[in-house]
Amino acid sequence: MTDDDILRLTREIELPLNLEMAATGEMLEIALRHTPHAACIVPEKRQERTTEGGLEVAGAHNRLAPYVRQLAGAGIRVSLFIEPDIEQVDAAVAIGAQVVELHTGAYCEATPEMRDSQFDRIVVAAAHAEAVGIECHAGHGLTFDTVAPVAAIATIEELNIGHFLIGEAIFGGLESSIKRMRSLMDKARAAADGQRSA
Image (spheres, rainbow, N blue to C red):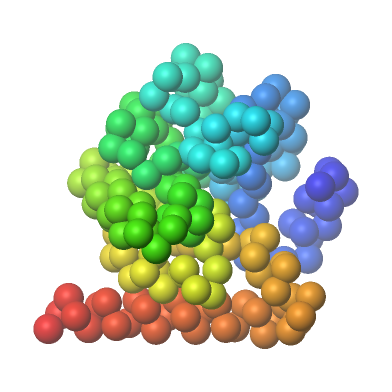
């Protein structure tokens, strides 16, 4: 993505713009120049834990806190992409993030025998996020087959799904892919809400 892409999107869409960025000086400068609605800090390189897992916030307080402070100071909503782990949620709160995005990749890629335990990690971390007062989102690797259980978690307010939808768009078009995903999410949330109120 280039600066021109950000400018064009800002002009042409009415939806809030969420910039996914690494904690680097260059990315911070871009974010501060364009002031998107939100910025989600993720690992910079694929070899780092986070593209394959979540950002290590607990061990990087001093490195990450200045980025969070400057982004928030510019009126940008700051999110941290983390493992579904209580320690990481608490670390995100400690450095002033407004949102955590729980990495769902391990759940999505788990074998059938391990999927429940990976899902339970997400449930626990999302409940803890609500308890400590930080908004909770989730994403990474979600597909038509894996989205419903995560969408049904009441303490998760937003799902971020991009790569899968673009891939599916090749076969059935972007609008069709988005509508199908949204329908699966809405049905799962409605069913869970019905069970909770019963």
